[in-house]
Length: 113
Length: 112
Image (cartoon, rainbow over all chains, first blue to last red; front, side):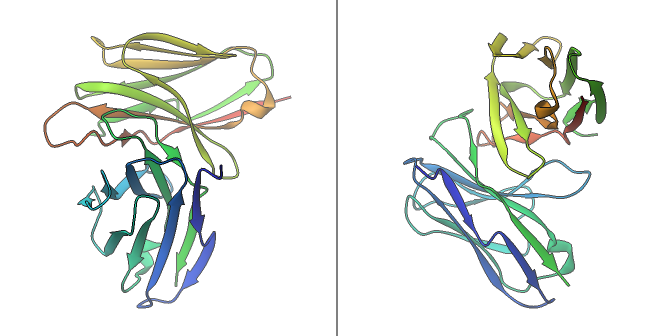
C-alpha cells in the first residue's frame, strides 16, 4: 500500500497562476484533510472532507477550493496564486470518527513568486 | 494565545540522554496526538492519548487531563531521534468537528 500520495512534490508559480494539488489514499479512509505548514507556525487546516461528497472549511480557507472527487481522491486548487500561499502543503486521511489517527502524505512544497 | 503550547521550542541533547518534551493546552479535549516530522518533511503519528500513559519502544507519552498537560519522553536518545515533535489536540467544544489543533513543534537534535 502506498498510503497517502501527493503530486507534485515541488512547484514554482507566478502570482496569478492557478494550479491543483492532487492527493490520493489507498487505505479506504472516509475523511481527508488539507493543511499548510509555514515557518514558526503549527500546521493549519485549510479544508477537510469528513466523508465522500462533503467538504468543509477549516481555519485558513481563503484563496483555496477543494474537490472530493471520490473516496480516494481529494484535490486542492489555487485559482489565483499569491506570494502568501508560499508554503508546504500536506494532505492527510483518517477513518471517520473523532480523534482518529491521521496519516499524512509527503507534502508539496509550493513557491509563489 | 495559542491553544496548544509546546516547550521547549528547540532542544539539543547528547546521545543516550533522557529527553522530555512538554505540551500544554487551554481547551477541553477528547484526545491528544503526538506526531514526528522527519528532517525530510514526512509526518507520522506516534501516539494518540485520552488518558494515562502509552509506551512504544523508547518513547513514552503521558497525559494529565485535569492539568491540561502532556509529555513525550525519549529514553536512551539516539541521533536518529532528531526530528520535530508535534503535539495536536482534538477539542471537544461544539463545532470543532473533531479536527486537530497543532502546536508549533519542538525541534530535537541529538548529537553523537
